[in-house]
Image: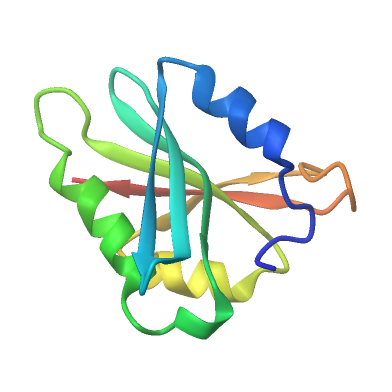
Length: 125
């Protein structure tokens, strides 16, 4: 429900087979209410997908995901988190900005489904 172009089960499986990819699922009353999937790079985390069910938004679920990644950052090696946000997804942009992210670059025509631009959003220690 969170994506214009959602991943299939196969997409998730393919992504999670990589040794450089990790993720976290958030459950509430034995129901999945959110998740984050990210790549581990030598100097950063790259969030590939993150979502919170509509029924659990504005309850701190997304903030908990971001905060867990921030706690794993350190000045010596991984010192930043990056992700992409659709130009039209103002909700995600506002959430990311409230979490300390800044728009660093415009990705012209980044989204294949619509040709829409995207933004590289970045949090740095």
